[in-house]
Amino acid sequence: AQKITQTQPGMFVQEKEAVTLDCTYDTSDPSYGLFWYKQPSSGEMIFLIYQGSYDQQNATEGRYSLNFQKARKSANLVISASQLGDSAMYFCAMRDFHGSSNTGKLIFGQGTTLQVKP
Amino acid sequence: DAGVTQSPTHLIKTRGQQVTLRCSPISGHKSVSWYQQVLGQGPQFIFQYYEKEERGRGNFPDRFSARQFPNYSSELNVNALLLGDSALYLCASSLAGAGANVLTFGAGSRLTVL
Image (cartoon, rainbow over all chains, first blue to last red; front, side):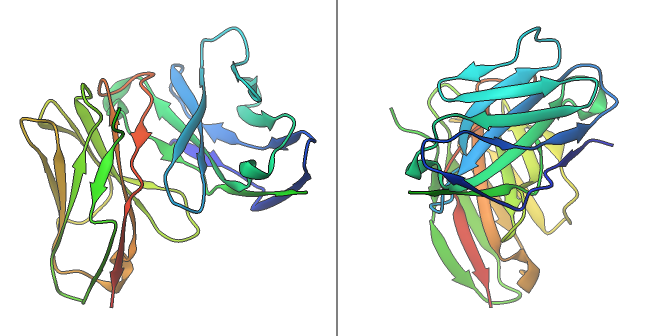
């Protein structure tokens, strides 16, 4: 069964420092996608970054990068040069691409609350 | 460009009542999905519609139903409300139904059941 695990309920980081948010996943499908979303207190889920299971390089989007280790089934989000506006809840999510589960449905983890200190 | 819009933003209902939540996708997006997010947890998949047909359904009771209209907007209906239905209901749209397509979420409808 598909599963996403985020083991860090809360994290603190000093402004301008880098932080890594952990995510491990489980799936039997060889073709899948991994997504990270940010959810501020307003509630809206904001897409940050995507990694496909067959992508050769780790994904990067501005200050966000994804440390994808396929053998370990981990897809950690790295935020460089943290800003006060990065304080939010962060969710890792996965979608399988094949089989009967190919509905477009995302499986989300429990989330990690990040607080950036000035 | 308008993002995904949801209405109402907040609502309060009592047990046993019925609620209808509405969602307008980004222009050009043909897929709409609904998620329930209980406080302190990640979103849980409820439904996905693509080209007005149901493409997927999560593990929710038959009290939950949805539909997609010809203009690709969507409604989520919940009957016989329970206290446990209190949650943030998120709508998301995407260009296509699956694969690597990124879901763009709305700000949600926060439902409180008393």
